[in-house]
Length: 287
Image (cartoon, rainbow, N blue to C red; front, top):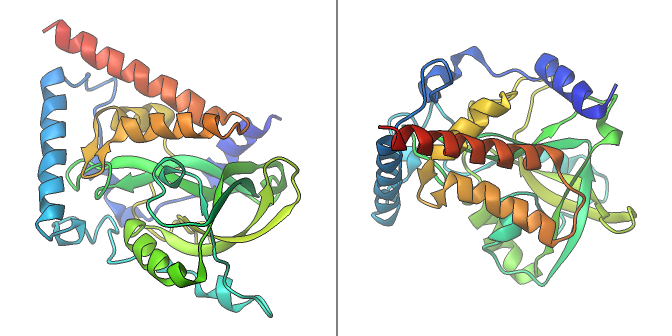
């Protein structure tokens, strides 16, 4: 059985979201309810601008009514065990970026190299109410999803490992803990050189953690989510950091610029979002 099919089956069986996450509040129009008219797109963009103004005025998604329910925390959580349970382990001064960090790093670094991590899949299954969406209409951003043990060695997610100076590391982590506060957990993973596959050392990474039962530890995680639903959200969402579709398209281009192997999931999602937007434009043009 091909890996992609195995993952689709295993993810649907293994990963669950607590029932009280209220996902119905984040529903986007589907094919049965009809496509959104183009005037609704303008409304989404206006909401994104309003959210940006709230950030500039000193407020945040934490102060929105739905912030607690969608796990927009004060800062990202920390997997203390990942740093504590490695004998003689010193916390790395490297951060692995697999999403927006690749095209919008946003912190000082003294080196960057292409690497990959094993045992994960990159998915747009994380809600974004503070960057690429709003609490009323969250967008979708990438997270790493831990693969089941029987296929984890077959998987690789390519990205960039940024080396940070000792003097900057503390401030960088503080900033990243805020940047990744919407349901992400900070942990440590082993990385491998993209060109040779040789070990490249540990790196810090932010992802959607699962508990021992395979249940997401954050209600911001909405996977496994059908590609059409993910694409429908990305096609229209916008937040303080910009349009959700721009995030996806920039990631696609950034991965290509590093000459990484194609990510079939990202490629397929780009096509699905563009098709959805064509449908929305056609519906709007038709009145």
